Structure formats: C-alpha cells, structure tokens
Length: 451
Image 1 (tube, helix red, strand yellow):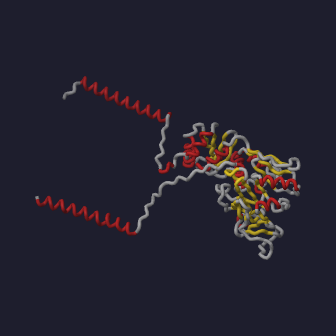
Image 2 (image 1 turned 90 degrees about the horizontal axis):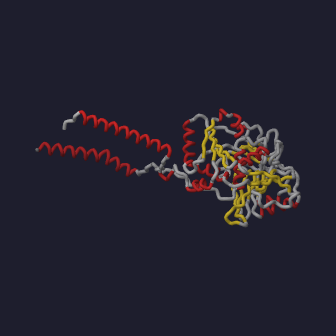
C-alpha cells in the first residue's frame, strides 16, 4: 500500500496527538498521586501498619498532635523516624512532625536533657511528654497518657519536714514537680494536721522523707488510705525516723540498718561509695524502657515478704559488691560479715500490686524506694533519675490497663535441614542433574546420527 503525502501527514499528526495525550494522562496521574496518596502494606504480618488498638486510640483523639524530633542532620535516622510517624499520620492527618537540630538550640537541648539524637517531644491538648525510644508500643502509650482528660492530682504528705514538691531547696523536689505538671500530674501538699483524712479523689499519695514523727492520727489515716486501695509512693531515706513502721508491716517490708555502699563506685568515677549506680533493672513497666543507669545517693535496703493478696516485683537492685554499711561513711570501709551488715545484691526499690477491694478489674499500686535524693533538685539530672521518676508516677496514676501491642516479626527466613536432606540435595543437583543432561544430550546426538 502506497502512502501519499496527505496520508503520511495525517498519520504523523495522529502520532503527535497520541504522544501529547499520553504525556498529559501520565502527568495527571502523577498529580493525582500527590493529592490522593494510596498505600498498601504487603509485608508479612502487616509490620508497616498500625495495630487496631493504636488506630482506635487515634480515633478518640480529636485535637491535633505535635511531635518534635531533635535529630541532627542525619538523613537515615530522620527517614526512619518519618516512616514510623507516617503510620500514625495515615489515620490522623492533623498529626504533624517537625525536625530540629539540637546543635542549633543548645539552651533548649539542655532544658530537655538531650544527650543524643532521636529524642521526641510529643504534645497534645496543652500537655507534652518526652520519648527516647521510638516504636509503636512506646509512642501509643505516650499518646494514651496525654489523651487522659484533665489533670491528675497527686498529694505529697506535708508538715513533718518532708521534701516539698515545688520547693527550691537542694533537697526539695521542685524541678521534678515542674516535670510532673508537664505530663498532666498536679502535685499538691497534704497536711494531715489540717485534714483528718486523705481525699479519695487523689490519684496517689507520696511520702517523701518525713523528718519528724507523725501523729498517731496521721499514721492511721495513711493506713486507712492503703486499706481502701489508694496508690502510694514511699520515698524512704536511710535516716528517716521509724514512724511509719505500721505501714511497713502492712506492706511486708523490713528495712535494713545502714546505708548501701558499692565497692565498684570509685571505678566508675563516683567518689562517694554511698552513691550507688543502678544498672540492672527488674522486668517491670516502670523500668522496661530504661537504658541509662540511675544514681541513688545514700539508699536504704530492705527485704520484702508481701502479705496475702499482694504481688511484689523488684524494681531497683544494687550491684553484687555492695553492702549495708552501718559505720561512718568516711575513710576506708569494708564489709563486716560478723555484724548486722548485709551483702549485695540488695533490694532498694520494689513495686507492689493487688486487686482493689472495691473493683476486681483494677489494681492498687504501691512503689517503695529506699532513697528520695535521686529526685531532688540536686541529683535529678543524673543518669535516668528523671525518666525513672516519671515512669513511676505514670504507672501509679494510670488506672486503666495499658494498651498492649503484640510484636510483629517477620517469618523466619532461615531453612534448617538435616544432614541427610543436605546430602540428598547435593546428590540430586551435583550428580543426578548433570548425568541426566549428559544422557539426554547423548541420546539426541545418537538419534540424529542414525538418520
């Protein structure tokens, strides 16, 4: 078939028009993909998709969420954080993520205690909380705490020389009290001389090192509060007067005489052996996310034998080369096995739970720490002291069961074969298959030759 110039021109125009329309269609699809993104998770077990519990939590949160990631100019780390946060943004479009280089804001970095890359600051409803380790379980728990309506009032026992939650003295807890307010916990003093009983609407009661004896009525009010299922944090110093012995008896706790000292402390750069580092934590929601060691100055050790209904979990334990020093804390010290001193490892922190008397589905939670200095204005910035304290209050004041997200792991890519199976595979592929190919080739050659 001959093509005249007119037909050739029409075919050329058709080709140009098709190319133009095809490019226009591709550009339109590309623009639509930016306006209406479509994503699908084809990984095994849906590892890149939020769990149903996290999706339900986001659906209940009606206010915007702001997340600030303090990360230096590291594209790999920033991309990893953006991918995790992106899973939440698919279900909550008003969740925003901003990256900040902490080197450009040194004052803010010191205020937040930023020591490395990857710290996240999560804000919601006027409250905020820090997150050091990013994963779905940790971020969802932070969002769950921030989504609680209103503030939680925590009562601090006052009137007996206790550490003040908003005090500015070195031994007070003012800096820590400010951190509690940031996560929606309002510290309030409680004087049992002016108030005959402890209010039932309090989220928890804190006893932070009383220096003078309590009146019998105050001790009875504390015992009644515990009997009714109230949450309690007892920061018990080694030199604290033994005025709360009835409370210790109810909890099944017996305090040991002396101050815990650690023979390995000087090797870690700690001059005072009474400053014990806590590097190994017990398996508990309070301590499971802690990575840095905590530092306890002059801690008291104790033994725990919980009563009927109580379950105890060790939170903090001293190192094996520690002991309870009953002599002066100066000069050379050595463990004396013939005295009342007890060798390590020693329990210095414990968490106790039991079903509440009035509600079978909730727990009464109590934490006892043999030191109150680690949360004071002087020592709060050491190690994981601040994070440990915030974790304790979050665990004490959150009544609902934490959201549990089962881990999603990839199927095992390793194939384990026995020695016989490996020998069979080797025989088939190294001997059998080459013999078959050679035999078939010889047969084809032989048949062609006979023709």
